[in-house]
Image 1 (tube, one colour):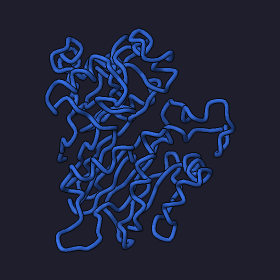
Image 2 (spheres, rainbow, N blue to C red):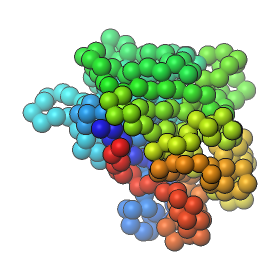
Image 3 (cartoon, rainbow, N blue to C red):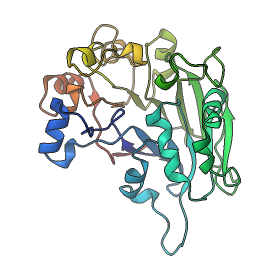
Image 4 (cartoon, rainbow, N blue to C red):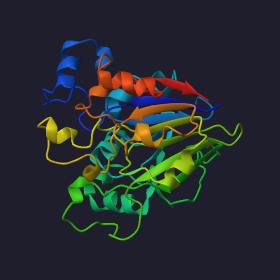
Amino acid sequence: MLRVVVLGAAAGGGVPQWNCGCEGCRAARNGGPELHRTQASVAFSGDGENWFLINASPDLRQQLNATPQLHPKAGALRHTPIAGVILTNSEVDAVAGLLSMRESSPFTIYAHGKVLAILASNSIFNVLNEKHVRRQPIGINEPFEPRLTDGARSGLEVLPFAVPGKSAWYLEGKVHPGGESGDGDTLGLKITDKATGKCFYFLAACAEITDALKAEIDGASLVFFDGTVWTDDEMIRCGLGHKTGKSMGHVAMSGDDGAIARLADLKIGRKLFLHINNSNPALLPASAERKTAEQAGWQIPADGTEIVL
């Protein structure tokens, strides 16, 4: 049985962001905790005991403490049910949480070689002692079975595939440690329970919805999809930045080329937006944008949401 827990649903900075006074952040500060979101990550398990994370957000310590499924087992002095972390990109909001996992518990980091090269080039990640924390490269369109900490099979299959995107913003104008050619900076994942055949897709960053991507996710039971901005020029119009969503590697929710319209003809069981920026009005339960998204069959998940397939 495949279990998925949303650890965080927000984009970088979370909601409320520490230095932001936009409408969404003000509402989160002044309203109830149901408006709060931490930075995007999910955990999944095939047996309910051993878990894998997709990305490690800067809020990871808070997320782990808030998720009973990921607590140490009763009576153990040191223990974690987390067997591995799968990275889909090298942005700060996907890798910074790794530094909160430096207390010598064994687990494996799975990432494309370009992402591993970035980790290797930054000595701060050496706090993850490779005697305990393995770094395993993964290849595009090369399925693999993540292993438990004792080397046993997990019964799960992970298929990484290339998604239109970009390298981390902090590398703009700099030499990429993993080289400039080829894909690998942005991945989507298909996670399958080999015993039941149930699967879900994770795409927290996507700059363009291609026909090939649509064909890949059509018929899925569950899809987590990039919901960073409502409109492509949202950050500019809100006075919060000077970049479009697409230039940051994120497709908008709305518009003819947005996720709602482009994926409307697909047969997907459950569609959840993830990596939602604090500027996105769809975060607000009473907004017209939230109503539009929900009428199109999309959900805006709360942190802690659990889905069983």
